[in-house]
Amino acid sequence: MPGRSRRCPMASPDWEWQRRAACRGQSLVLFFGYEGERQPQKDIRERKAKEICAQCPVRVECLDYALSRPEKHGVWSLTEDERSSERRRRMRRAAMAGVTAADQGPDGVAEIPQMLGLEAS
Ligand code: SF4
Image (cartoon, rainbow, N blue to C red):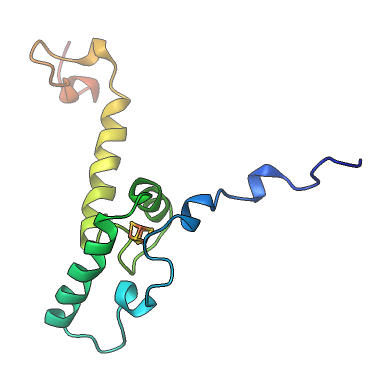
């Protein structure tokens, strides 16, 4: 059909945010390091990369992208270790979001043992 896109929208992720990335044109080494890099050099490099990230208008999109896939290397707004922590934090939050208000105790803390059937209600 003339004028209609033949591409499946699900097959084409939104890359628009990458066009606005502050790291465009920067050295990949600054964000991904190099073979044999030692920890002190890595710390300095990551700090420099994160200075660029701090000015980036698409930090949220970048981090969401990196967390949505097994991206183990590089600085994507956060370092590898920071992303691991953030990934765990989001998983805990998502698990807690499955807790309904009725499952909350009087102080707002979920009655998790009760929910798991470990205590009589
Ligand atoms: S947050 Fe950092 S790594 Fe991500 S797009 Fe922006 S500058 Fe690049």
